[in-house]
Length: 80
Image: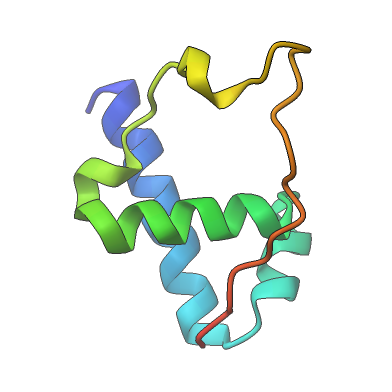
């Protein structure tokens, strides 16, 4: 199993655990990730399936001229 496959598997397990527990905040806390990161993973999976969970290099368009990633305050609905 490649590193990429392991990362995909971990992200999928993370989503499955959140679905099972019905508590995104607890899953994020236990796994040491932000709620926003969970939302990013969930959105990528919903839009692109397993291919959406592949690790990619950050694109240049993700950052504005100051190097900031911009407004990240948006929250995804848990939907669980």
